[in-house]
Image (tube, rainbow, N blue to C red):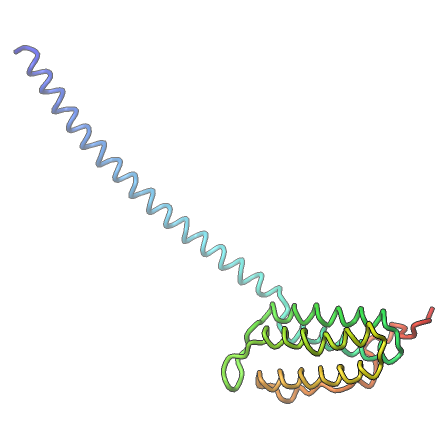
Length: 187
């Protein structure tokens, strides 16, 4: 019987220790969850601040569309002078900048609801801009003029859809780039 009391005492002590360690462990887990939640909130706040900063660095869609207009204007004069390699270059820039404009803002509000600008741009790329490309590759001035005019109509329709009917593109009167020699044999 001498051993029963110390064994019993040790068992009771071990039980209390287990309960105490369990409580401490639960407390430690609760503190860790709280710390994780605080860390997650801080991370989210940092990401939101970074996103806001990056959004401020990205040009807005109207800014990008001025690039489209610049290249589309110069495209006209390259084709007018039958400088087909330069026309191809400017058409590529039009396409690239139009895709950039769509990445900036793929959907815009319009008078009749949201307008899928990305879908319109893709349709224009697959139709009018492809016709321009075909005319350039075929070195066909008449086909180029027709495709250019059809592209102007498509652009005006998009502007109408997004509630900006006052943006009416037309054939340009002069090149945007005075420094570019549009003559195909120019030096």
